[in-house]
Length: 380
RNA sequence: GGACGGGUGGGUGAGUGGUUAAAACCAGCAGACUGUAAAUCUGCCGCUCCUUGCGGGCUACGGAGGUUCGAAUCCUCCCCCGUCCA
Image (cartoon, rainbow, N blue to C red; front, side, top):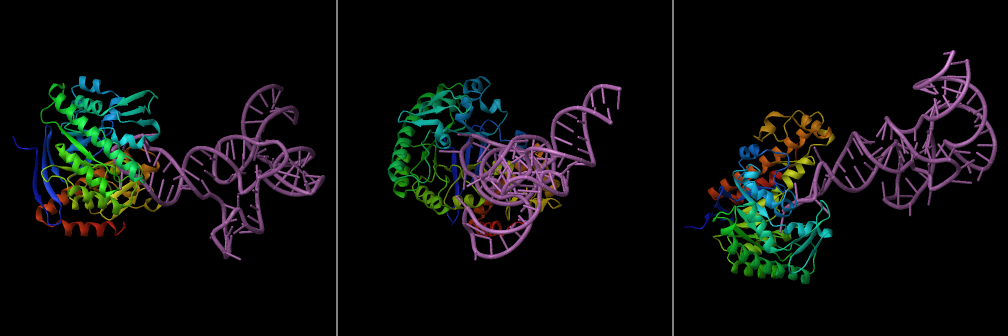
């Protein structure tokens, strides 16, 4: 039985083309994964996501554990069946919530004690518990619980977080190997990914990467980046890590990013990314276009009859004007959020298709340079 | 005709003698958003001048006049609006 990830080709620039087989379909890489934290990509139906060509979605361990609860989801036949999503799902472990819910949690070597943001109740998430929950959810790709810290952080603090992440990775893998066969929703092809930490310290990143690779995970993620550090550091840390990751395993840069960041990541050999930007920004009136960002709530679009992006083939751009989308946003109409999200995700997924096509042609560097130039041109 | 209540910045609406250009909210203008506590958050929001500073000037709480060192706040008259009584 071959390994589920097939590394098809590396472009002269270093960009990789691949395909990852999951129990719920193939993922063409480099891939962008829309975030559906609570079992929904806010604003879009699963049908629309399928039409957009989404091959894999994110779900969140912490949020689904709190509500509606992983046992309920298990009883409902797993997350795929529960949310009526036939394609692949990657569940984040709750590691990011260690970072984003900083004032509601306490981290120890054993795990993370959270006070629920919903009702204040205390919950204790351990690496084992995080895997157990993700197995119950039936995720195609599970993530180990990691300690994601803020930027800036001292070398000492970053080293401690990386060490703890490594320890948790070992525990996660042990638990995963021992329990996946007996998990009610289990599938032998479920995969667990390890996570590299190390903040913005190259030596810690290298050490973290080397150690995590020894554990032989199905894929490797780079966490703790794009949390406020300068973009140059994001690129540098990504490059440090990917240079040490095995070529035959998928690399996942967590939480990235803007279109420019995606181009950077792919150039550094990243295969998978996820980010809330296209969906969250859509709800906040920020639309992505080939020529950069367009803030639809700006008064200048009040009577603009043009589509958001005149070169975009998406159903929103083919049908609606900027003036109408601005009206919907200003009037706080739900459809505004829906259409904005639809457009933004189309833009991201189309960007990924173009990236894969460019890599296949061996022209990624030229493509990226052109795309960057366009993104910086500004919306007319 | 009479009795009450009320008229505040684009709107709603606090304030009832002294850092009050005037709370708060809404509207409006702009910005942020990177493994989602986010359809959220932040800033600005009378006019004007400059050496852009917790800077200067002007205008402003229905209208006119008055009391006072000082009034959106007190007094007088007038004009509107609402409720009730005839």
